[in-house]
Amino acid sequence: MDASPLPAAPPPRDAARPAGHAPGGPYPHAHPPRRPAAGPRRFAAPAATLAAVAGAFGYVATVDPNEPGHYPVCPLFRLTGLLCPGCGGLRSAHAFAHGDLLTALGSNAVATAGYLLFAAFWALWLVRTARRRPLRVGVPPRWWWGIGALMVVFSVVRNLPAGSALAP
Image 1: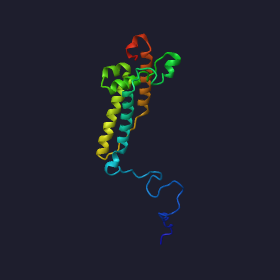
Image 2: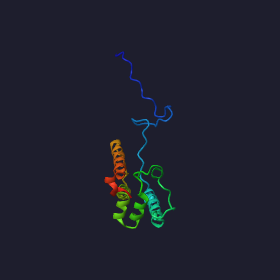
Image 3: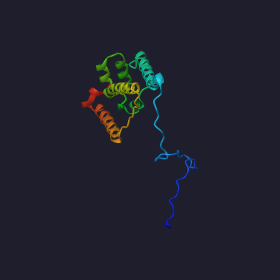
Image 4: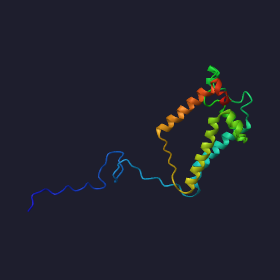
C-alpha cells in the first residue's frame, strides 16, 4: 500500500470568491464577449452618430461662418494672431456641405481630410454592423504621436509666409 497523500480535491464551483471575480474561466476578470443587438437596434449607434454629424453640418451649412458675429473667434488667433490647426475649419465645413471641395481645402486642408476620413470610418462601421461583426478600433500610440506632429507642422507652416496657401 502506498503511503502518499491523495491529491486535494478542487474547490466547489460555488465556493466564495473575492469581490469582482467572475466564476470559472482562466481569466477571473474577463467578461463574456458582447453579442451585437438583434434586428434594427444594432444600427442605433451608427445612425445616431450620422444624425448628429448631419445636424452639425446642416447648421454650419445654413449659418455662414464667413459672416461675422455668428461664431466666436479663435482665442489663439485673437490673442496672438497665429492660426491654430482648427482655424478655418467652420468655413471648410460650410464649403464642404455645399459641395465646394476646392474652397473647403483652401480654408482648412486638414479638416477636409478629416471629414473624408470620418465618412470612410462611418461607412466601415455601417458595413461591419450590417454583417454583425464588431468594429474594433485600436490605434497604436505612435499613430496619435504622428497625427499630433502633423498638426504642429501644419500649424507652423500655415503661419509662415511660404505657407500662406494653407491659411484660410
